[in-house]
Length: 82
Image 1 (tube, one colour):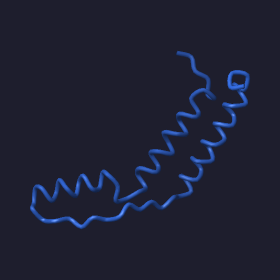
Image 2: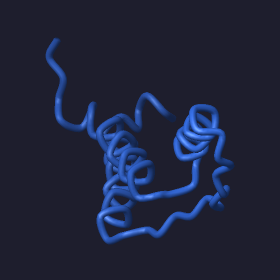
Image 3: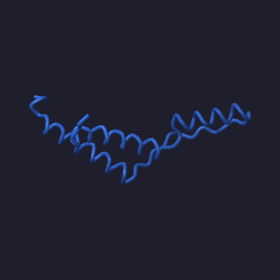
Image 4: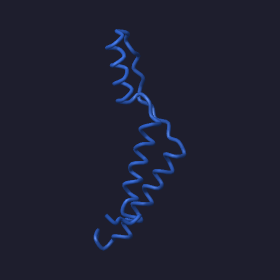
């Protein structure tokens, strides 16, 4: 398996963008699942918090990296795409 950097850069960018989004948001599916689990075990109703995402500089950098890697991949393989 011999991959060049440009071939995996889009997937690395997508994975990093998703992981930064997942770990810097609150009130999503994971939070609701944990709240329901606690409510089921204790019988105490948990307050539902709205989903909130506060983007950081790392998230913006990963978005820029994603855009740059998509553009670089397109130019690298433009004969295939066109």
